Image (cartoon, rainbow, N blue to C red):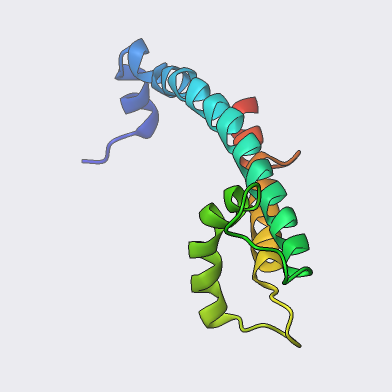
Length: 123
């Protein structure tokens, strides 16, 4: 005995066909919140990495003093771990540049004009 797909679909209650719409309606605020949080956080991270890149050009700068400590303390664990994989090139630390590039890519993928969160919020 074969089941006809149309027969099964027509016998389902109307609430079943509304399930994707309800799920999307509930998911949309989460996507909007994700865009609202992810965009500025990634931009702040990129700004800090730009400052950190500039600070690598001035090795005499004491990163343990204010205001540089506010840049060095949050970034140093990440950069220290990355330096084990990516050594300095010609005496220049390129790990902040690496993380700036990675996070710029993540920003474009998530909240750029054709980003995942943007496209999901439009559907």
